[in-house]
Image 1 (cartoon, helix red, strand yellow):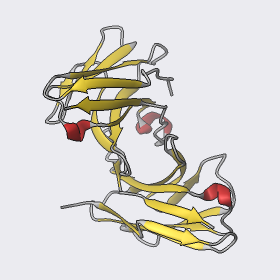
Image 2 (image 1 turned 90 degrees about the horizontal axis):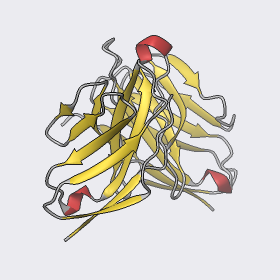
Image 3 (image 1 turned 180 degrees about the vertical axis):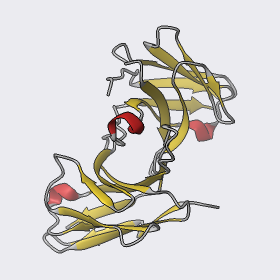
Image 4 (image 1 turned 135 degrees about the vertical axis):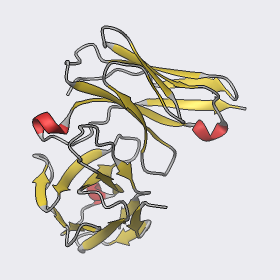
Length: 115
Length: 114
């Protein structure tokens, strides 16, 4: 089945130690997103790639970076994680086909713990 | 994107229809209504979307009022696996604005009871 895969499902890192979260997709979608979801809150968009074009949300901290080396893979880098960055990180994809709907397909998420 | 208002929580008996309301009184003519749900510890799942006509798929039906200021998601025969947070999201087409973000509100927590 075509899907969005996130690895690992659970990640523990130390305060200030860089960490990278991975996302891959077999849907061949041209748009990929990273959302942050803190406990008991709704998901919040950090940034997205439209093909190779990177689009950062205005309030996304500089501590968060992303890379998309090819259509299938996207990475979220947290340069110096703080305790406040503990959250579920969700990767999503959509096909921007020009039809305007572009529903998003989400991976299972990576739960990040910062110690 | 238009703001949405949903009840915080709802209960539904297993096997009965679950009707989840959403108010979006400031919706613009080019804004779509989307529904997603998030089962505990999983990523959100797309359910259905519509512009002004009622829509139905294998998961649910979406009823949009004629003035488009509110909508209802209907799960015709709720099961225990439908227990989740349901998000109603209104957004413009990315074609017109280039904005592709989903802005999630607080959603409705649906508890299906056995």
